[in-house]
Image (cartoon, rainbow, N blue to C red; front, side, top):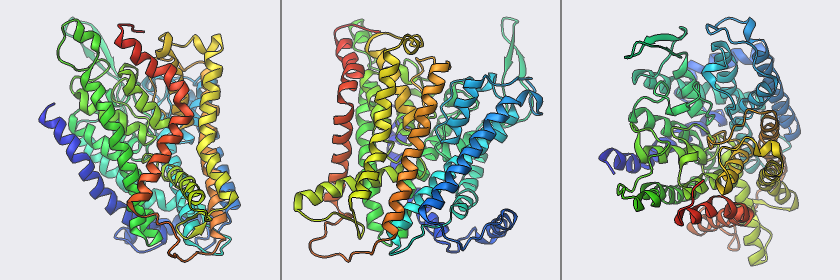
Length: 568
């Protein structure tokens, strides 16, 4: 390992904790309506938008009204993006003269970007016009991220409020998420990326003459701005097909570090926001600690497998002990591992290497990150929602052990909250397994595979884990741009998104209507080390019990066969 590798591994958690704490405190003020240093600049714009759209910022919504507003707004955005793709050939800012996107690809893309998944079954620089990239994809990157943050803020209010029928105003939460959080961070990251060589232009493709006298057409475009919101909003949709492995998206190790930090930042900050709004900062620290333990544990296993490399190469006399297949030489093993692990724990989906080329156990870690519901930091907003559902399950089990009605942050947990939490945890998992089973049982599903045997199974599992978990990264060995996969992954993305957000808002409404129970000597503390250990254990056990059979037949079996010299 180089000095740069060690610096990345050591500095990333330290810098992340410092920035996440500060941002978390700032977001708590924003969503509480408290004045911040940005208020003098942004408040006039915020008030203007409320007047233009007829929003009363003092009006509170019930959870049903909040959910209905969120769903309708999301559906309208998905429909608008589909129409934009269908007519892009007639619109400006299309120097390559791209025509309409194929109907099933357009549906898949609209749902993908509308659900913060950003699964891309197409090649961006060969399919989408500049206008579609900017007005469609980039706008949805902002909106889908803001929707996730708004949903989380509503859930937090469920814990804060008592005997209340309301959980806030969706339009206010959405607006503040964009104006105070997403836009400033994206502007900062965009400028940093441009300074390092990331492309930002409206000019058409560049034609270059190669050394052997040939002509090469080099695609360019408004890349840096989309790259920034792709990471900050945990979206993941790249301007280019190669995503962050492309030098115009990610030219240097420094931009690679910035992008990893960018995609982790808001999800890591939200537990601190939760603690600050709850006026119990230790609670936020406990949840962040559980996330960090899971993150570092998975990273250790993943990195060890990639650094050890392929045993068949060692038998052939190659003693480097590294697995460089599918990775950029300019970035190396550690930067690729950090990026792959971070993008799958945050539902970002951006990639700087080909996950299909990872060692089998490394691929298993990536699939596990997504399959458990994207709760190790997770997507902006929805990641912490998923973690809180695991916390509800943890406290329910703790209540059974001590024979007491479970409580979480002063609210009694009853049947309704438990059922909704299980819906959030289990629905994406059930859909993942069901759709994977259909895919491996049909010729249509199998015809897209790039590999046979357990590796082929891993390709299918990864695709549906990524879409059901609203991640969007790909294993890079499966041709998903077919009618079968475009439609099935669209179903997975919709279910993964709304089976998380709608039940979460229902939990928020239920909790907001309850009294806050004062802590007593019989109260199980949820801001200490024991709670952190129990929460981490529940997540690992639930994930292992749910996916052990399919992971055994996929990546684990491939690992065992690799030891015997068998490859796929």
